[in-house]
Length: 283
Image (cartoon, rainbow, N blue to C red):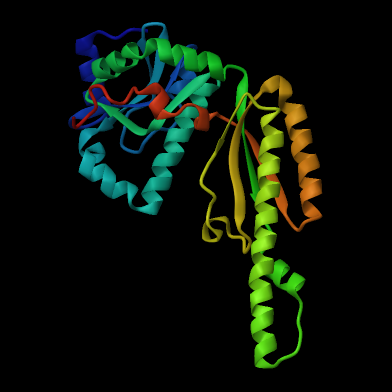
């Protein structure tokens, strides 16, 4: 349902006290029903989520207070872990709602425009590339695979113990370092082999920076942090391949884990879409 400009201004004022900007969550060809979109919680302090037409494409948007989403205010909020998590959850809920009706291009969190007109203009300028990206993501999902390798305890055990005199201690320390290096090199080779094998079942793949042990909560290094774009028809084969690789890895004190299916965030990158460079709030 289209809204006349005067009615739209009145609606924005009614749901968001003070000046508002348009927050865009995702682009899709087939929008979910309005009754589904409007009941999805968005960012705190904003109006209900809504569908905004942009030619043959549709945006899932929300009116949000300009004061809370200005560049400085937003940067301060996103530096607080609780606020960052709250914003990320709101963004993901909106993207999930958009994806319930078909392929979706998620935009970066807090993609803001001064108003609906600027948001529509930005998407219209990239219509061809966006439609191509939607076609690429259709009937495909993202799967995350992580490989964790043996820790230093495994390498130290391989090095063994020996006499306690100083010269022997130095020799054992040198042997232990050499063994740790060899164990890690073998583990990295195995992780790369896992990646090569899984790419055979995917239409695209990308490797993210390995997470630290502090983030993973494990006392062993993360050797592979990868994402794979998999045809839904290949899902069973992909999961089966991961299972076989995980069983093989356990023989070397390594662990291969998989999670998914996910919305393909890793394969709808902002640099591919380039929507956010036109008419941004605060520009």
